[in-house]
Length: 356
Image (tube, rainbow, N blue to C red; front, side):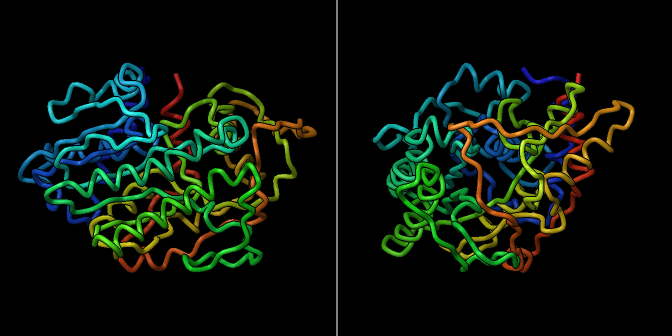
């Protein structure tokens, strides 16, 4: 069960998302399926929808159906909202080759995915299937709905492959990607998920929407996530020095979860079907070393340091080869979206949420 700090900060985050200029009323009285509903992004998507009616943004409550692999575990992770009468948790594993019984739903938000490189080496099949076969299964099920209004696929910046330019990445610029490399299980399956969405839209006029998040962080990331922005944050929570296992020069654009979630809903309700949108905060660009410095400096009273070590050969964690991964977000900005949360503010929220 989450700590009280998490519940408080997550509730404030949801309040901020609901204050965004998004046509929420379109969700009034609808049924919305969320995959990965107990995960980091899925949990925020779910909490946002459950909060709409109580603040008067919809005339009728939204029925949220959360697809999860483990209902008892999901109930613990969603403890503060699990008894909401408009939430139903359904056990379903998107690794299986089968069509889920979605029934008549109006929207599907597909956020189920293993996102950390720690999984790419030791569970490539479990990484690949939900994004590819799972996406096809969900689209097939959604196709049977009487009033399908929108299918949102949460893709990834990994689809860009090895982009050689250090310029901000636009949605139509791609680099090479080796399909025979084990790390490609994630990026290739995200590419396939996008292709499936475009195919269903083109052949069956299915309203599909694609978002490509970049390095999204916030409360709810697991202590064993494996990505530096999560590992470093939990180092601060535990009062540990930050151990740097690289030269720290790789640069990333870090986006707080509220900005990402607002971007997802903006694309779903304002965007063009079958058109990918980068969702990120270019102003949040930091090198890995600068991120470590930022977190250390946020809590000078802890007297923590950055310790450099020779990296250990870890075959399960397959690191990215990008030196700089920063997106162009003009396409999303044109829909009226903007990023509001700076890294200093966002990482402080994340650390406070997980602190005793």
